[in-house]
Length: 381
Image (tube, rainbow, N blue to C red; front, side, top):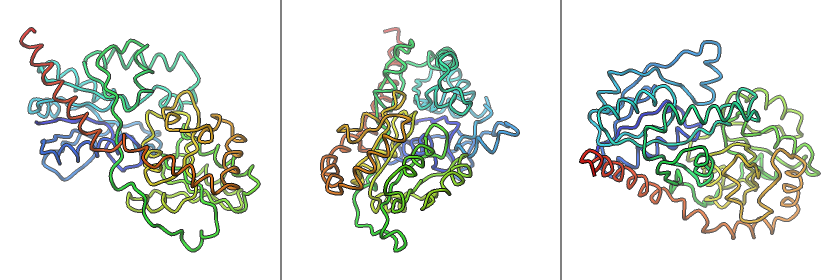
């Protein structure tokens, strides 16, 4: 099978969409499918086609720090790639995706899409995540100009499917986890000497508004044990400087660093506790990766986040936006290390259902289903 993957995001692995796209490409190739990739990223590979980047002028740095480099659609490149493909998978509903889906339909190519960008993840950068009108406008625009042209939508969680279905997205919504790779597992990892006596609280995610790193800093500042707590923020993003300034007031300023995958596995394993404070998530694969490494999570119960579904007990949740409640949970686990061990045992086999192979089986099935659907459609069945 020849699969064309069209995406605006394929740079550094500092955001979920990039990570998901790269894993999809890698795993489909492992299954002996030819994968043709169109993106604004420069990659030395015969099956990669580079588009020019859109210019947002004074906002370019902010956008790039979020791991997003939106592309300028190139009809010639899109037509060349799509005409070769057996199925076209489009990751995002922006300009390039919209151009690609129209070309795919014009050429009668089977097309599948993904829903990785909730409206609130966009409006949060504009300080408008609580403006219902703005969010609803985006959901309607996405449907009208993109999703209504496909019969198959990959939803990385039931939360996303439940979010868009009432808004008129009545196509075949495939709930498929983005998947956790085998490398995220328990290993014997020792804390660095300088952190040996510290209680390490880890949060993995892009340093951006909706992730709420500020909440975690406030929670630790409010803790009885702040002198012995060391925050680790694994990631990069536009808020790095402001978070460094905010965190400098803690007895132990947060360690903020983007880690390569093998190092990240080590950091997760030697941390004591994992916190996921984000207000908005379509799945939060980072949280699943931490759980796969044996960490007990504390997760925001935000109504806009799929991540809360990973909580097995109330002790794994804190009230969204409430740093005092998060402090209570962190202090509870600090005072009861036996409870951490107990909780880690409860999570022992939890992530089996999210293994990458299972996810790729389901993605592959969706691609074949789209091909069969198009064949029947063309035959008038």
